[in-house]
Amino acid sequence: MAAKHAIASRASWGARYDNGVGNRPVGSLEKYLHHTVTKQLPRGASVTQERAQMRAVESIGEQRFGAGISYNIGIFPSGRIYEGASVHRISYHSGAGRNTRGVGIVLIGNTDTNKITPEQIASLVWLLQEGVRRGWWGDPAITEAHRDFKQTACPGRYAYAEIDEINALGRGVVIEPAPDKPELPPSKPKPMPSTKRRGPSGQGEEDTRAIQEALNALGYDAGLEDGDYGPRTTAAVKAYQADQNKHGQAGLVVDGDWGPKTQAWFEWVRKLQTELNKWRDIDVRVDGDYGRLTAAAVTTLQGNNGLHPDGVAGPITLAYMREHDSHVPDRP
Image (cartoon, rainbow, N blue to C red; front, side, top):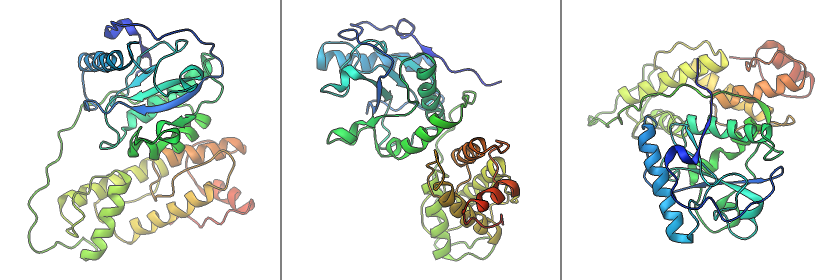
């Protein structure tokens, strides 16, 4: 069974400085998303490592403002959540009146150069919903990112790109975190031969580049976008196929071959996502990946309209969508 989310207390990580600078009412707090641009810990980091980083972030806040840690809640790549300044306390994270009327939620690390992890996304969604349950705020969604109101890259391009989907999940489906996973060693690109390898279905260099580009954009590590259909690209295609089967019941053979069936599925998912975005309470990226976020969007549509909420866009769900002017074709 997956472990439940929890917020580790200030005492658990050894907070040494002031707990904010004053009290403020809760109930309708806003939520501002940041990143620290400090050391990037791996997903498999230990609690001891994370506690040390919380103290490092606290020291930075103390040095800058003399008021202890700048943020109210910190989330690591592992998905573990830590209390910074208490939610009912004002801290220095967003400037002007935002420090008083909202909480600073920070991703510990640099999400401008590192992708936000699935564990962090799951924890953010849980936190947004937990805040409603605890009476901290009314809307389970990020109000603004730091860059929305200040000239800055914060909270980083990768985190910023996920905010709409995080908010859609927060307002729709309650999820629980996956168990902690060990950090995998980084893959090392292997020397490529001078002759580009073709894919199993005969993809040439130009087609392979397009496949690699699409997979890398989706977060599947296809390696260099060099037109060489080698082991790394094959592994990325397999990972994509497996995810489509898991979340969308695609029925793809997980063989690493981006052939006609996988291409047809990719194109169909993009059309489905386009149509989903026309429905109330749904805002999902049109990217051809029937992953967890698209499954959550389908579940939202189903739950809002009296359908069985299983997250799979099957015949009944597609028929319902067509009855309401959605132009989504049959599944490939």
